[in-house]
Length: 142
Length: 128
Image 1: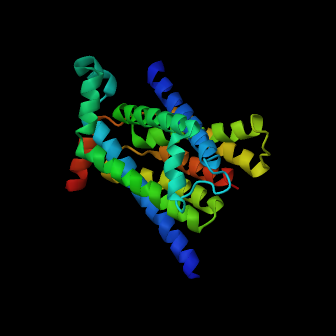
Image 2: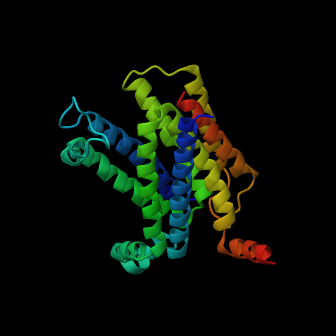
Image 3: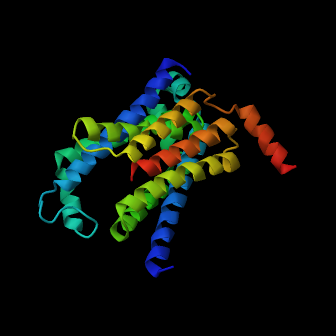
């Protein structure tokens, strides 16, 4: 793994967590705050696409999808998914230190488990070579 | 078991299945297209974008991701977010590991299984 590839994994975390946060803010502060935005108020849902928070959130999520596909072009799915789950931790820490939310001991335990899981998977290899995949496919067909 | 519980878990199962299908198909499409870095040097960014959008597997993956998103919205309008979000996220980590092993022929060793289980348990706890 090169430093450029680690940067792509880090960008997945940043784009996903910031994109989801901005979308969430935009959806909660829709054009009509009393009614809010939901699938039951489709008019509000369409109007919300003009909301700057929603636009920025959508652009960040497009960035996330681009980086995610880039990572999948050179790494295994079972490597990329756990390695980028630090996004859950990032959102929880933003909640704690920026939005001053309370984090229960159970949530801290969750953060610790995810961090251990990420550390575990990133110390292993990131890609199953094509030759190994073909051998595995042949073994199963026998 | 009440009808509401059955309906909630059916929707959760649908979200997990559609999300796993989307992830597996997109991984398969990207594997077939090849390393974006090398491809970009050979045919440029435009060529990479064209290759991605011409992949039927990628387009099918996007369709499954859309199904997963709208089913999640339905589940959220029916059941508590504190159940739906952790259950779907945590289960998707595990089903993806099985799917990658079966359909993508990935070498899912003990290290990756343990990582998937730690992350799944962590996500479940994070939503408590």
